[in-house]
Length: 189
Image 1 (cartoon, rainbow, N blue to C red):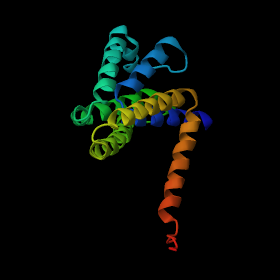
Image 2 (image 1 turned 90 degrees about the vertical axis):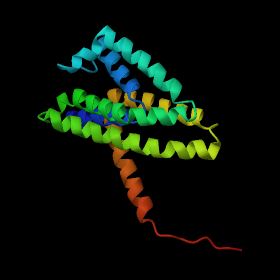
Image 3 (image 1 turned 45 degrees about the vertical axis):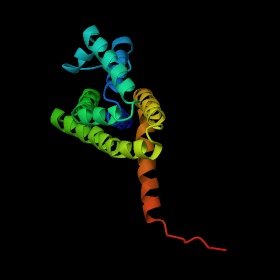
Image 4 (image 1 turned 180 degrees about the horizontal axis):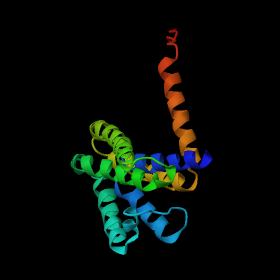
């Protein structure tokens, strides 16, 4: 049971992080699968450990991290990544859910697609507000925070995936509490 939960945590953590940055979690998975035993990629996903794929992913990571820091260019990148990020999430979910058990590959692809697509949709909707409210000066900082979140969540999804499952449950419960909390007006003096 714990193994199933940790594998689900890995799949959810990796595919969700792809909604912010498509290529960084893919690169982390490729390098981890190539150099450690923490991840074993079954066919056809084992192609990610090929040096050509790793090289292309490294170049794409640098490009995405760079363009995401530039106002207006980041918005264009978000539009272009409306296909890339959900696709990366689908690949990450499917490649890491092989150990989940009898999960059909199509269901795994759809789950990853929706997870990464949902995170990407929130990012794409929020970014223009950040640009407008900071006149573009806050974009690099928000982008840097997103990159750190992707890096940390991808590593945690691999090393301690049960934490990801518990974190998602905690965030869901916190959201329910916040949504259903009684409104208490502030007293004015």
